[in-house]
Structure formats: structure tokens, C-alpha cells
Image (cartoon, rainbow, N blue to C red; front, side):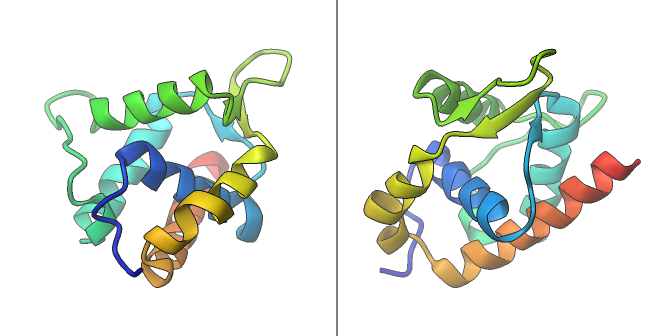
Length: 131
């Protein structure tokens, strides 16, 4: 199937992250919303269809999405994302996430768009962390 319409926001973000980690050299995610949310906001404004239903509040210091926060909370609650470093300032994906993606999500998402969004996410994250 080539649509992302029937996936939850959590599953869309799971998919983006697994490809970012697997194919684009992402090793850890910062826990700071001020880094993650603006990246997803920028990608959404670029017109990626899979992110069109992610609402953002742009009336604060940085674009914020409660949908993204909820997705990250869900992923931590299901142990897809884990705080494994000593200061708990970074997230790592659990090894079982790749299996979940392959078995449950891969056939339900537009893989071409996913590859492009994951690549853009990775570029933006690398740039944000290099600042």
C-alpha cells in the first residue's frame, strides 16, 4: 500500500525514526522539544503529505506540537525509545522497533515519501546538533 492515511501519528514518527537511525546515521535523539519540534515543523511546511495532520502552535519560542509530544510519550511508554545514557538527555531506539516497522508498518506507508522525509529529518537533526 502506498498511503500513510491509516497510520497514527505515533506510527508515522516511528517509521521516520527507524529509517533515520537505520539508513541516515542517526544514533541518538535529543530529548529537548526545542530541537525536535522545529524540525518536524519545517518538514511539515515543506508539504510532506504524511505530516499534514500534525498541528503546531507557532505562538511561542519555537513551533510546538502536542501530537509530536504525545507520539514521543507513547514510544517511550512502549519502550520503542529509551533513555539509556547517564544524563538522560538523549533517546535511543529499541532494537525491536525495526521488527515492528517491518511487520506492521512498512506495507502501510508510502515508502518513497518515508525515505525522503527520513533523509530530510536526518539532515535537519545533524545540522541542529552541529550548532
